[in-house]
Every structure is written in C-alpha cells, then in structure tokens.
Amino acid sequence: MASETVAISNEAKRRQAAGEDVLDLGVGEPDFDTPSLVAEAGIAAIRAGKTRYPPNVGTESLRTAIAGAMSRMSQDRDMDPSRLIVSSGSKQALFNACFSLFGPGDKVLIPSPAWVSYPQIVHLCRAEPVMVPGDAEWGLKVSVESLERHRDDKVKGLILCSPCNPTGAVYTATEVKAISDWAREHGIWLISDEIYRRIHYGPGPAPSLLDLDDAALERSVVIYGASKAYAMTGWRIGAAYGPPELVRAMAALQSHTTTGANHPAMYAAEKAFGDPVVDQDVDRMVAAFRRRRDYLVARFGDQLPGVEFVEPHGAFYLFFRVDGRGSSAPQGGMEFCQKLMSSEGVALVPGGAFGDDRWVRLSYSVSDTELEAATDRLVRFFSTVGGAG
Ligand SMILES: Cc1ncc(COP(=O)(O)O)c(C=O)c1O
Image (cartoon, rainbow, N blue to C red; front, side, top):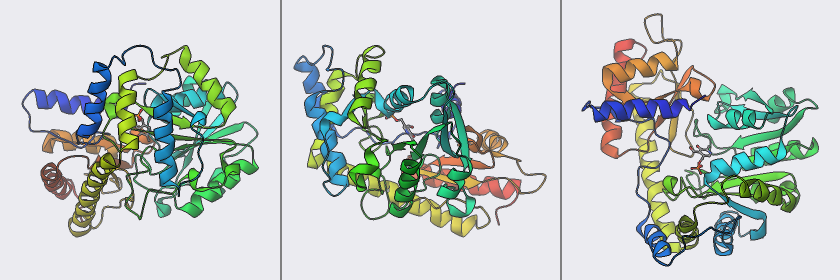
C-alpha cells in the first residue's frame, strides 16, 4: 500500500500546480533549507572526488560524528562508533534492523497511532505487526500494562517512537526506562526510533534509551538520522546503533541492497553532526518549531476549545480529534481532510493513515504566515461543519 501521507501531499502539489490556493500542512519534513555549512561540505565532497562507492557501513569519520552527537545528547555516555551503521535514511536503518531480526511467525508490537511505515516494514519482513492502542488520557502513549496485554510467545520486538510521529507526544525518562525494563525481562528487541529526539520542547533533547545503562542496549537498536533535526530529508542519511552482531547482519544485508548510503552526503552529514555552528542552526529551527507549536496550541485553546488534541512536546505535529461532532459534521479524519481540502484548500493527513481515523495530523513545518492563514481557515471550517466550541 502506498503511503497515504504521500497521497495527500501529491494532491496538494497537484492543486498548487494548477494554480489553486492550497496550504500544505500534510508534509513530514522541515520547511527549512539544509544549513549552508552542511550543503557546502556536500559540494566540497563532490569536488574532492568522494563520488565512488562508499564504505558499506559509512565512513569512519561520519560514524564517529554521529556517535559523538548521540553521546552529547545523553550526558556524554560512552558510545562505540563501530556499533553504528549508516544507511540511506533512517527508514532504511529501520528496515535493515527489522529484516535482520524478525521473520515469519514473529510478532512485532507497534504503539498506535503509528508512523505509516512501521507496520508496512514489519509486513515486508513477513512478520506480523500488532498494533497496541495508546491511551487517549495519556497523550496516546502506551503503558507497560497495555504492552503486556498484547504479549505472547511470538512477540519478538517492539518499535517505540518518541518524540512521536504523528502525535508529538514524548515518553518521559521514567516511561522509557519502564518499557525498556519490560522488554528486557521478556527478551523482546526494542527498536527505539529517535529521529525527532532533538526537536523537543522540554529542557534538552527528548529522553532516550541512550540515557539508560549498557544492559538496556543489549537487545536494542537506537535509530537516528540527519533528516529532521538538520533539515536534510533529501540527502538520505540515517543510522542505527545496536549490538555488534546485529550491525554485522545489517551491513551484510545493506551490501546486497543499496551498497551503502550516498557517499558525498556522508560528508555533508559529518558536518551536520559534528560542527557546533550547525548545532546553533538546529537550535534556531527548534525555536521556530516551538514558536509555531505555542501559537497553534494558543489558538486551539482560544477558538476551538472543544477540539481535543495531544499535548505536543516534540516533533512538529499537532494531532487533534475530529469525530463525534454531530451527524452533519465529518464522521472521521478522511472525510474531514477531503472536505477541508475542497472547501478551504488546506491539506492535512487523516489519522486513518496512522491507524486511527478519529484524528487528524497537522504538520506545523510551514512558515508562520502560512500557519496563521491555515489556522484561520481551520477555525472557519470547524465553525461551518459544527463543533468549534
Ligand atoms: C517516525 C519516523 N521515523 C523515520 C522516518 C524516516 O526518516 P528518514 O528516512 O528520512 O531518515 C520518518 C520520516 O518521516 C519518521 O517520521
């Protein structure tokens, strides 16, 4: 099945190309350009002839830079760059991890709502995704108790996403530890997708598996990447940090699929992960996301007080509920998004794409002006279809 998020984005682009006034808040990527120092490093790498096949697992210097960036976010914890493998985006890192770990007969737990690709990746591994509904009272996060209710002997893995796409919820340090302890106790592989870790509105980066002791990393994979924090989605650089044996298996798999990530992009990413000046660019982007988040939350509070949403603590998404607003109102996310697109020209993503169509995802990765205009239209739409109060 093609990604529904991509389908909405294509529809918005098609209408924009036809001259329609469409605001696309369906996108899942930063609206910023790649920091210039990073782009220059990529260009310099091409000019320097770094255009041949790359080392299969990534250049030594990039692995060291990524390990350094991950370590700095976790109180300078010891990290071994040889346990890190670079892939074509964190999506490939996730696929490689799942394909190396799971197969027919295995079940993999996925807290829901979930990023569209997790269940599809598990299907591609011929394993069975088991969606574990998050608790609406708790920012749609899952508890150990709900994970335990879905556990049986076939459960071999759990994919955790924090900060979460699509909800913006963030698991606290206590919650991360409780889930890690539970997974260890039952011999379940924990794949922790921390691609949005740096885009966090609490103090410092979001809590991580890397904040825990070494034992927590024995049957774990931490997924990280350049796409979101460094505005580098098109460069396709992601990484996985895991036990040596698993990293070897992932390297072997990758050697027969993509060979490795894009070689010159590795030099750009090395600059991103390693240069303190780029870190300041990231701080500025995170500050802009925070400002937009605060703006949206304030407008929802003032003008859409009856609309329930998940408190956004990270990433750049607002996940709000659209069902139960009376018989004349849209009955779910899909109908809501279609009508919003046709009457107001605003593209959002129906929650059904993430496993729960009672909700809708709005990406505030757009300019402040666009966000303001889109919010005006959304408020007007709610007042016409009912249920703004
Ligand atoms: C939760 C999550 N994980 C992973 C990815 C993949 O990112 P990339 O392959 O660009 O590193 C995305 C992209 O949308 C995402 O939202």
